[in-house]
Length: 261
Image (cartoon, rainbow, N blue to C red):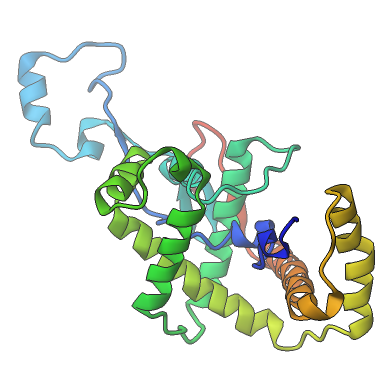
């Protein structure tokens, strides 16, 4: 029998993908010669060892977008794409993985800018540790590696380019943003019995029938159906709010070789 528990009760994918927070100021150095097209002499190389990257003429990352003055860098995009291996999102078939990552980073920057003026919700270590434990249990990749042990989990994270401290920091900030979204959008939503019954009859029952499985009685899953509908409405409100922030703010996409203003 297909379990109703297999349905994930959380903010829908589009909303969740915005709240897995990444730093917006990481730097990555790509060395270049001091003079374009000319090899460095030994003396130049020794002198350059004591200079800052910008003084050496090195390329220090690239600006991909500017969101109300906050920078989204190329390294952020690469890191976001790597992080999808830990939290895989539903892929929009009309966009590339890179475009999806940039959209998430821009939306996340908009949310964090609003959150800065909002009372921060306390996030306990227990809450963060539970989220990490759920992640270790649910990750498909962990079926092929030892995520259960501390050493195995550390090795897996390192293979994805992250440390456990970095992951915990992201999970904590993600929880803070989710609390903000819940407070900002969920309080005024009311789900009627008619909406619950319509979702059960027109969405869930066909899904069970397709799997040739027996659906649980509505009364036994009414609360969970209500949660699904609540999260769908939260996601809709969040999308509309983000569109307003984009329209009223200043979001600028940078082209390769274009200088920031």
